[in-house]
Image (cartoon, rainbow, N blue to C red; front, side, top):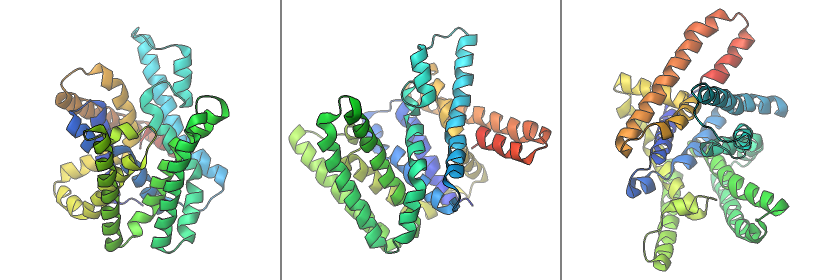
Length: 336
């Protein structure tokens, strides 16, 4: 079951991520800096709609097929094309790290985040189901976020090597996105009043921290500087914008869907976000224009490639396959 308002937010999130990668002017770069958190919150919203109890290993296998296998297919095609056209690529270590999602191509880090979240998502769903009170649930998330912020700086002195580095990376790059995912699970069920309160609280936190940092730095400090790893400053801005967008998504979507062509484009991008994201990666270096032209070209070409791919899969490949199980897996791997 799909929710078109959620798809609309996913479209906005992906559009902002691609915008970030074409290096827009500083003000635009800051304004769009809610993109990855928005995508994580949206994944929580979607998960709440579709998740059903099933054996954990069966669930994990489906998520690996959905998240990891498309990346491997893309990397094989991309690296194969580089080899065929004698385009220099990095060494074997770089390639191996890309396949393992532990380094290599830098733009694949977001896939690693979604994979980690997917592994823990069923546990978060249990929490969401058992804690009926919205206030209690949001309070738990708030305490979790504060503990994360303290733990992050407590572990920092031991983060240079060995186990300390592993623990630091796990805490710093999984916990904040788990917080966002858990928030996304609950947001669709919140009343308008609670959404208003979330908007006001997150904005107040952002403004307070922004003023504090600006006082010490002598100028406004971009939230991007507190993204790796995510801090409360970065997260508060992202939560403010995301909840605000969710709050106004219904009238915005009603306006957008009046144009059938625009509606279909938005839904196509949202429903094929992983492949569109993957195809935009090689275009980042291939297209050398000013940021606006580069953005439009990368977005348009990525959509075109993805459209051709999904059309070939749906109208050419799948009709030639008799097994329903194989059809399902091919569609899972090559579309979406």
